[in-house]
Length: 354
Ligand code: AMP
Image (cartoon, rainbow, N blue to C red; front, side, top):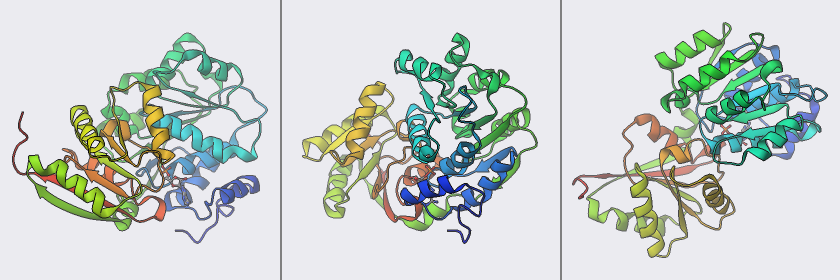
């Protein structure tokens, strides 16, 4: 944590008081570096993981700079998934308590258009959304881009991985050239660099060593298992460790279904989330998990990407992810913002029978 306060970074007293009420008192490293630069209006590339406090890093200075009296879109924040968009929208609502009159609209697919259109017509200044749905609103003319001055691409690498490049470019092409663009990404690659070069204005890079916060606060264990004993061992692990909230990651939707059924049969309060479920179903499960009605969430990577759930104390990798980045993201669900957490990995020696 930092020796500087949020006020030292240039945030106004109202925001500092709101943060204090949320028990956010010391800036994280990314906040310390990014907030003053964003307040100055500089374009930024932030290399950081979820759990580093990046939502506040871009959200707080933007909230400070938005004009409450102007009732049209001023800031556009693009996220890869519906869950992340909802979560960012909620975080910004929490941060904006000291600015009554600041309104938001969260635009994502799988949800009714009319509420989103109402929010836009109601004068929302902060728009958070997924690429497909934001583009849809731009095409329909329900989202008017002419006064957008701030753009945030949250998890830019993942959006490109998910195949949103065309949508992102089509969107960025419609925005005013005079704007501040903030790119956040967990990793850098050629595609991300290309996007930054094309749409950034000499951005300043703010970089953090990969996942220091997660690695420092998460104890990790490894179990080398044969396929048939996997479910049994996971049940034993859940009994022995008695975690309050656990996320079990699987590589496929099929395994998510099988694993959650197996745990439910054993009487565990478990439920699942994956990409084949519609948005209301996913939101219901997430709410039950956040409220503690279920304590075990079985999920695929895409569904769980970026979920901000506090106090997850155990992450189980039912399957080893094929991409090391996914492993880092998975275990980043625990040990967040200085808390401690645990992660367990299981591998299979024998191939899974068909
Ligand atoms: P994020 O990386 O934006 O997903 O944030 C991860 C979590 O850390 C969220 O629950 C934030 O509310 C929390 N958080 C953000 N900044 C701070 C901070 N400076 N001190 C403590 N918690 C924070």
